[in-house]
Length: 175
Ligand code: NI
Image 1 (cartoon, rainbow, N blue to C red):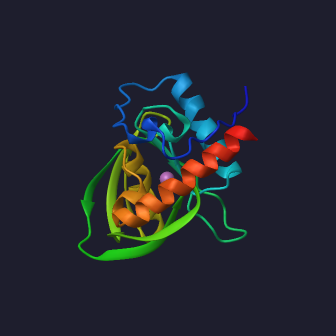
Image 2: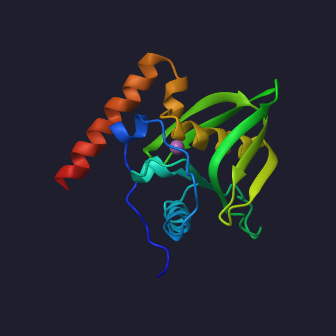
Image 3: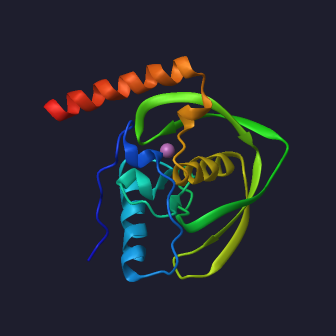
């Protein structure tokens, strides 16, 4: 069966605040889930998606930060991703999130991170990410710990965005 899109949860949702569990062993179901997540991410469109955003509380993220027109896509699937080193040098990016549609804010994070994960074939991988890739992978791993980019903002700004999302959810529920 081909990849299937899943609905993306919108903040606030208790499932977006949970710490997700390690994936002990790969299975065909988990590989299918990763394919579904890529399909869901590309369709949105977005550059990253974490399993809890579709209501699955497993440590699984997908990302593809290739943005240049004509450049080959680079879908990455990461089970149990872990940041094992981070640069002192910081980077500021205007971040957004598929669970917080149309809201953007600057977040400061380490510019370079070394990440270890298990790929879709069960192989251990390790890679250094820089720039947008580094920001994206940190943002997605945060999701696995129940953390959203708005948690880095001042409380007032965070509350303002949360109220907008509550309104959006009410409107969608009525539609
Ligand atoms: Ni996000």
